[in-house]
Length: 223
Image (cartoon, one colour):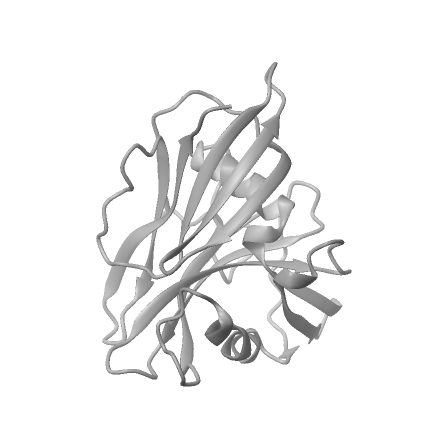
């Protein structure tokens, strides 16, 4: 169980994301600095208790209309080997000390737990409270059980999403899977075609209303 510490982070997550977001291919605000607020999300627990895992929604109000972005984040107490390109930045945590914050689509611990969640094997947790399941996060899975031990992941980002090609081990044979992580959230969007599972969650609109969308979808590919 992850312990949520209500303390300071210097720089803050939003400050780090304000610098990082414009360089991403799915960012819609070309040639301007984001004006971000945290508007939703949830967490997952790392079974080993070493890596913080958060699926954050930030809303950018810098343009003509607000845009909600989904940013999976992983928090580590030391650099993740071979993931320099995925480093969002470092921050000094008031309790835990220096933390390395990564685009979680490149972190094998986050990917493994997301895969478990997509199959209904991980319980989503409230974003800001310890030991509190988030009942608003919903999972639909229509496939057969898949091992969640991640052997390798290939990450490709486009104009709307990030696609992970994941090779798993266990359950007698290796499997190859595709996880689509939505980056630009579209309220009430349908699950992608041929998905065997998806995760939906909510966030707050600028007017204070509740919106929902698919955050991630799973399908099996040829081995």
